[in-house]
Length: 357
View 1: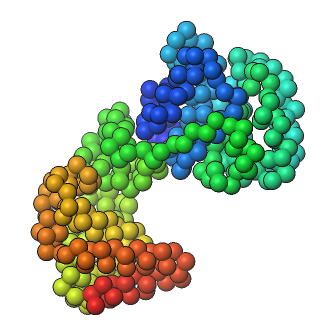
View 2 (view 1 turned 60 degrees about the horizontal axis):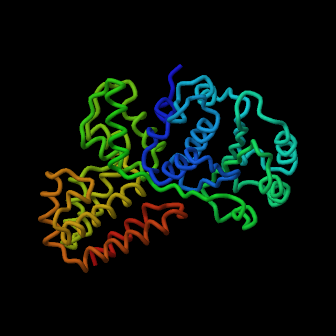
View 3 (view 1 turned 90 degrees about the vertical axis):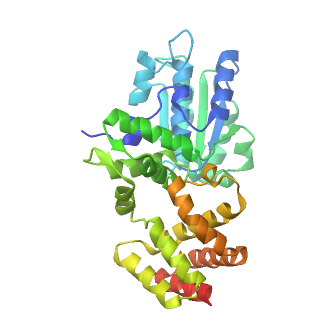
């Protein structure tokens, strides 16, 4: 059976984890010094490696290698990766959030490890626990048995009670930089035999928005059943408009050609572009113009080829900062309002008319 890329390329050691060097350093130092905590709180947006790092932590605590733990190849490491290691328990708090679930966990904690040195409980989306479940969990979290470690993962730490936060070592996961996501994509394409253009992978990395899992899912969609990947393929498969469209519609707005801008927007939607995604990318286009105006080497900041930067320079020089700033604000407000609108297209069209006025 085919395995999704985000599962097939899940890190097996700390060295394979990307974008979280500050956390890897802390965890490695604790292993070397023997100062492992009894409770951790991993916070961060989706797809940044919280659950993966929790599993790596569990591997490191039960790895049989003499050094470089986790090794990723010993019997315990492989069993944890396969989800069959009896002393590593993963619990989804979104579906196991009652007091009874926590009481059952508290009873299991009292039993010593069977196959490894340490029992590790990984509780995903821990903010979904009910207030009563949190209260039942407090004492166990504060004073677990010596051979037990709790790792709580959440995308919303603000929903956790202060009493839980004070009992954990909190580690915040950052969004992964685009250059690291792109480097991962290059490795994945090389190992899967796909010839991908650099611009195509850069575009995918930008749309991943700092999430490795989301990025690999996008890559999976784009290379499915194909051995080549071009920028045009990515634009088509993700429903994204090309640079030419944003140059054209921006020129029309700057010339106050409302009819032309509305027609270009309508044509983009007729080709299958999603209105909110089109507008988000248009805001990004105006941001690119702003950065080109005020930075010496925009290629070091923008996710654009040198050719596209050259094409945008003329527009950036002719558009004043007042116009760029006004367009960014109007489109951003339209995006915020359109999220809850029954007809988001109408609000975006209204924003186009206001920009032209």
